[in-house]
Image 1 (cartoon, rainbow, N blue to C red):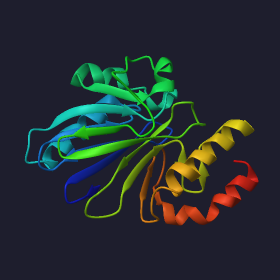
Image 2 (image 1 turned 180 degrees about the vertical axis):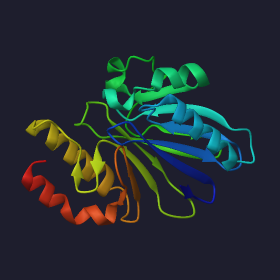
Image 3 (image 1 turned 30 degrees about the horizontal axis):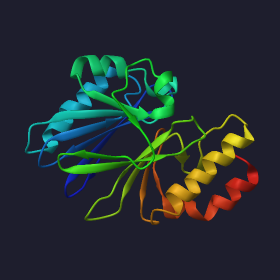
Image 4 (image 1 turned 135 degrees about the vertical axis):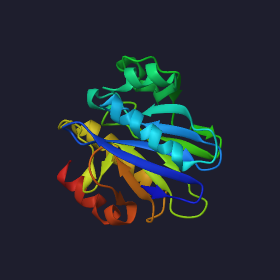
Length: 212
């Protein structure tokens, strides 16, 4: 858990694929955003219940954002939407591949204004055509970046050996993340442990040379 001055970030690992589910809660207003309802709806609902203790306001799930359309990131989406009535968002190009209706189609640079915090959508094309990262700029500390399957410790996401997709993803990650954000930015990936941009930045040329 990241206990920030204005926001609490909780996370949960679900499924045999170690998918990360993230919950952001405003400490003052109770506004919440869930990132990737990947699997295990009951565990996600428990995460929401735990997040209710992170605010002095009325906890309200304002949005569920899907970072990309791959099956392992949406297995609990229908159930969680049905039980919370929350609105949904995903990258515009991935919307047709998500079986649950998407209320907000995200484009690069879109800003979501929630009561108590903002999130910026950063389109990272390659793992899927519409993959998005979500950026929270903490006014009191390092930024937090939720990268889905586009950036991990040690490299970018899987592009299935497709050189054009790899080049697209690495270019977007380089230009839209590493050229845009400082080294202390905390990276929260879609699977496994997190990292910082500073830890990964020295390896960009290595990733490009190896081709994955």
